[in-house]
Image (cartoon, rainbow, N blue to C red):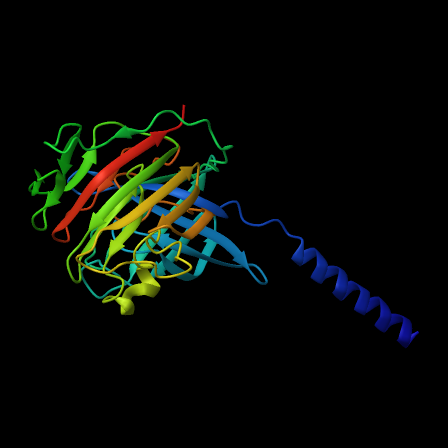
Length: 313
């Protein structure tokens, strides 16, 4: 009888363990496009990823209004509320960022509190899958006419962009430059030149930054930013194919849904990888909508030429 009782107990333990393993994940698991509301009423983009690790522990990743994606070591979900705290990155102050969101109707609503105690209410929707077949391509079109800024507008600061000798030139840190037109899927050709320690970026649909930086000098930042041709913080190139500062670099980017391929100076450094979400500095987090091409100009001088886009039909 003793052996029988022990066998039954063991079976019960195994059954309980299997039941625990098969418990459905919390409904907050997934990726979320967030819209924060600043104290002045501005809508600010953000992004959150939540998944289950091991025996039911919730972990994730977070992208704030600026900066690169950062890991979240633990999230809690109880009473229909998701919470986590995370160390500051580019936010002012030393306290942790606090996040609390109620889950209802397959959406999130709550508030993020920054290290200075400023509260940012937000709403969140599930990020779209954006899985699309390779489209038929239309004819290529020039984004820059070589003469002026027709078809572009400046955002986020004082405009320092101008056409100089057929080159789209940002003389010093100032505004970002955004196309008036918006795009869904496309192939983009860009030639860029930056000074030593230069830093810029090309935002696809205004949401996903292809990093432009002096990769040779800024090796210490490579793990966080990925270097020239990276999708900032998310997708790291398989090699450093840059020519270095003061020389023209050629970027060819194909974006279909979330699938991106980046060719730098003729070398394929990212191949049909999925971009998880918006990067820091995005114009918005409305990933399911078409968006513009944005050139980052807030970090300093940079030059672009031969900007061509081939949109999907």
